[in-house]
Image: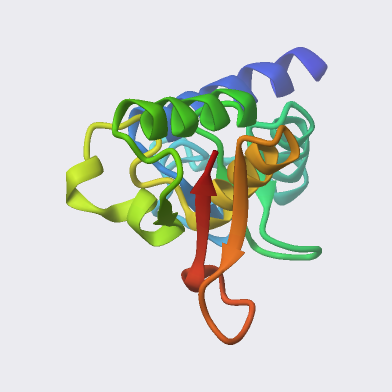
Length: 158
């Protein structure tokens, strides 16, 4: 069963990467429309317990992260956290952003950044990466709004 679990988790993760999926939900994995886990020809499907084990394995290997305790939704790491961190800082250096501020929304979805390895990454994951940059002294995470709203978060690169 452990070997099957490993194979299914690799298959699911490759599916996420191939289809550029950065957020997903357990509900969608269990739906009849999710054909990877549901074979209508043979009336076979993975059960909820096995899907849960697949996700636990992916979470333990830092390939997915649930949005909160008991959450149905999870984020998919297209890059490891350290690779994401380095990609963001590399971009900041290449584009003259050192000493300047960029918002998480801009980094995630601005058309000028299309083609960067982190473009399209959910803001929650970008926040974790820039927090790592902050820990290493290469950036400062700043709140640009009145409340702690991830859509109003930015980073000043050092």
